[in-house]
Image (cartoon, rainbow, N blue to C red; front, side, top):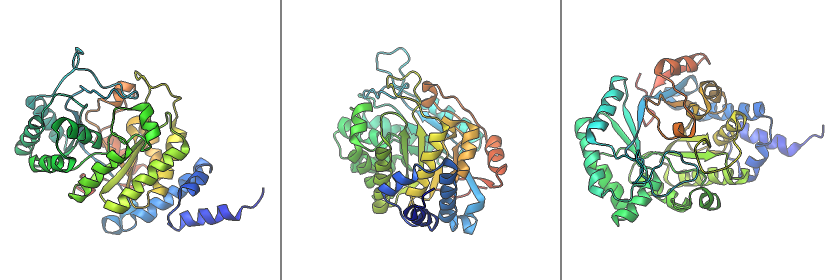
Length: 363
């Protein structure tokens, strides 16, 4: 074996917690999976050392919330989506206040503190419909955080309502919006976005919404849906754009990556498995040195890989997912309750703690 001093220097750089660059990320991606995982776990330890009163390395968190999709009507027709419907489809819907009340009551009965509310890009719902829904939820359930509306939805709202994004977000916050999820991120490279979702917000627009939200004091998450038509270099470009945005606005609380789920979709692409998922999550933890939490995607990978991901850079298992309607339409139907969450975390020697959206511990 030929000794490579430059690789040793790169590995030491990662071990020491120093920032890496895109070309270095490409090089790291070819490491044996176990070695890359060990480096990611090291970076997790460095990142979490000061969290939760210096006990961050011992703690893995989860949240009890519910995905509520307020409508499945959408006019952007993403090739990777099996959830959307047109207005004329028999199973198209728009949620009622009574339905959302029932869903939130069920969530609270299970100890839930949040709803994650997203929907299709409905071409006809006016702004008052959204403001009335937010106000209704906040008035009836003031203790529930509304984590809602992805950047691509806000770009859609800008066009439908004919108002600037900043004004819309301000109005939504006044009505009850508490934070913004990172949905619609896919891959933040326009070549890819034009292939898989040409009618959806492009990369600069997605990041622009996050920039506005962060400057208004809203926290958000960042996401990546990979394993379809993108290259490794484009995945890393996505990570780099997220990192640069975080440098500028410091509003991302967590990063979540998951693999493309292909069943019932129009996008034909070779599926990637757990090995590739763990590799990308580990690389994400190493590259995103300014994002405090990395979330395991057990929803797409299953409980076993979701647990293993906690040794590949993740410090959070995400939500118990009382309800999930999007990836399940694409053939993925894993389920987990609080008891399962605690068992998976404790079995690895960590302490399991429920958290809120801002990673404050609730128990």
